[in-house]
Length: 159
Image (tube, rainbow, N blue to C red; front, side, top):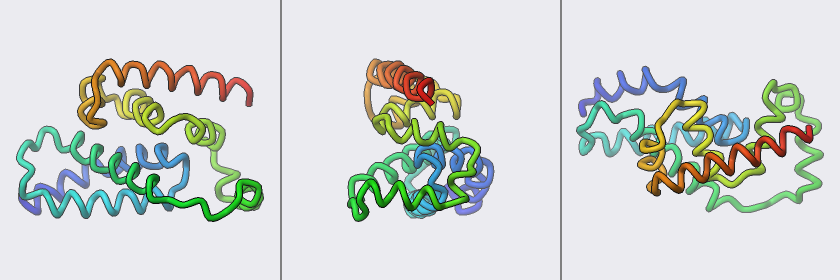
């Protein structure tokens, strides 16, 4: 893939990619921006070895998903839960966000379920494509979507 092709593909996919990452990060736009930037850097550094241009979207989403997972694994809890609640209660940008309830519910379900639900419903990926992105079986993806739906239904109906 040439530099020009990479730039063109990034321009056509960046809105959907960022929307996916914001939802994956449960509304934390700063984290989503960091994950997106790191993902694009990783993709650019390895774009010479990437040849299937039709699969660029799935490729960049996979890089983004893996970058998010790696970030979550390395993240350390530095603030107590009560302190975190107090901080977010005073943050007018987050508390006025239109999808705050959804992001809070997404944050409470396992990452694999959240990713499968977001890729399937928000981005329109097929079960097979999601399985490739997450490097898992199609049956596992179906199970993640089903469980994720049920978890979200339960969490959102109590709000």
